[in-house]
Amino acid sequence: FPEYIWSFDSQEKEVYLTFDDGPHPEITPWVLDQLKQYEAKASFFCIGNNVQKYPDVFELIRKEGHAIGNHTFHHLNGWKTSRNGYLSDIAKAAEWIDSSLFRPPYGRMKRRYARKLAASMSKEQVSIIMWDVLSADFDRSISSQQCLDNVINNYGPGSVIVFHDSEKAFPHLQQVLPAVLNDIKKKGYISKKIGL
Image 1 (cartoon, rainbow, N blue to C red):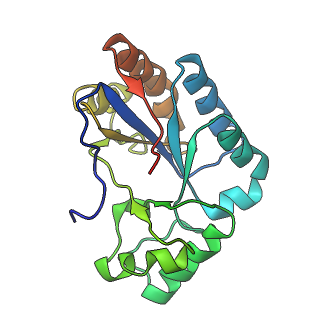
Image 2: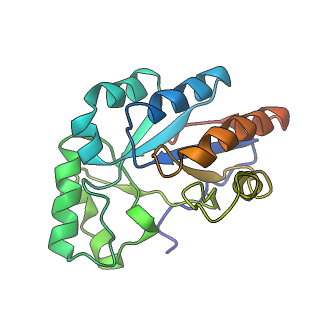
């Protein structure tokens, strides 16, 4: 799927940290504090239902200068949902999330759905953001060290790195995110938000 963005072509030492599934009332503020400590920017792909429940946390993400993106309203699997159902769920999320950035939950979406995204999000153009580095912070079958290794051994200039500000991921995230931010700084990288 070359029309999707997997990473950014960059000669600079820059990476793009992304967080899926929030906002969460406790975890997202913790993530924001970590980012602030390291002067890092990130992009948050939010679930509309969570934005509706926690608008103050969503506003905090924006206030602190991070990018936001649409991650559907109900975290739907694009391979298991009808086109109309999927696109209407994205449109419902777009009522709460004003962004031209979109990430499909599970990284799964049929190509014919992608062609209709802009209309669903009321945007002229939509950028589908995937990733080239998956932390697997949601995977309880791996250790936090494996999760950390997934990131620090695989990112490079222009990498898009996926984390999750969710309860399922938090046991790994609270161990791994500070270590990743430290590694990024130590190697002379900058963490930027996606701005297209």
